[in-house]
Length: 91
Image (cartoon, rainbow, N blue to C red):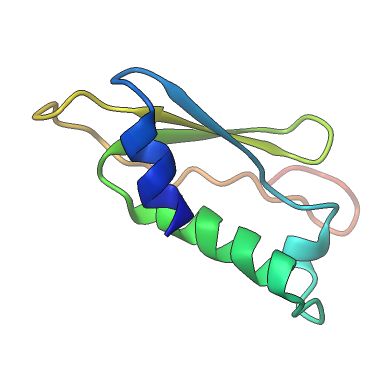
């Protein structure tokens, strides 16, 4: 899988950068083309990969930064998601 190859090629502390939302298609449940499915799978793989720490930048189309962790370093994974209501307010 692409995630494995990308993480293996990056040195400890290096970054893997991804277009998180793929022009909004990732969050559109009707979008089922191969490219959109691949981006969804990539994002899901990063979320559960213990080799990386991840963060999403809410800029442009959403940018995911995955930092390769040094081997043997413990980590703390959080799921602090920011959600917006239909009125645009953050909850």
